[in-house]
Amino acid sequence: MVFQLLTMEKFPKKNMAKDYFLTVNNFFMRSKILQIILVIVFAIDLFFIFNNQPELRFFTKPLLLPILILMYITSLKSEKIQLDKLFLVGLVLSFFGDLFLLFKWGFLPGLGSFLLAHLFYIISFKKKQQTRISEIWPVILSLYASILLFFLFPYLKEMKIPVIIYAVVIATMMYNAIKTQNRNLIIGALLFLISDTLLSVYLFLQPLMILNLLVMITYVLAQWFLVRGMLSSKN
Image 1 (tube, rainbow, N blue to C red):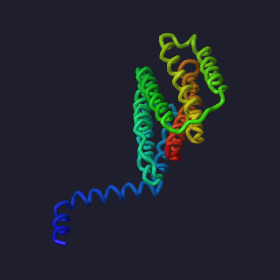
Image 2 (image 1 turned 135 degrees about the horizontal axis):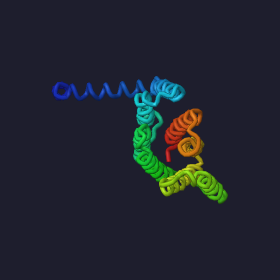
Image 3 (image 1 turned 180 degrees about the vertical axis):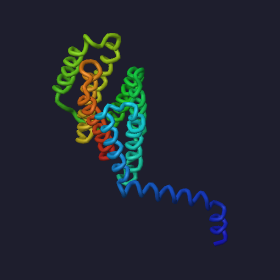
């Protein structure tokens, strides 16, 4: 008993900090407050796009991925799933991609950040149990990349090589998501594919506001489904 009292007196602040962290963690998991915050911030970001206020998006867009990252980390315990560090790195790189693309000079670093993010997603998917799928999928994805590049090629100028590499990588991510047979991961990868296709049209062909809206809607949904997919699989 004396030892217990001495221990409590010696480490009270440490125990209090630990209890506080557990309380906050449980609060986030049980209340779903992070999802509510995500919806609010996302809606405001879309409002800024609709009203053509890109300067205000510096206050909203950089918050989206950190919220998703917190959702992923705080949900691990309740779902009894171990942290996938590779997937987490992919989310962090996506955050930097979002940040870079807010600047006019940020296309190449943004593209590079998302390219690396997809590579980490691919490795993460490969670590999961994968099944044999129809050989038609590589053909379909190669055809998609080829058609997209065919239409974009005259407008890419010095961006030809980076965009070609990116198209190959995102198609590869889609392929590996399909092999996991995880519905959420497949939906997330497909939405990412759609989002990047719309983004390429927006940047190189038609900079329409509606395209920018659709890019963000499909992009945030893609990341959300990927997070849900990682939380719905124990492999």
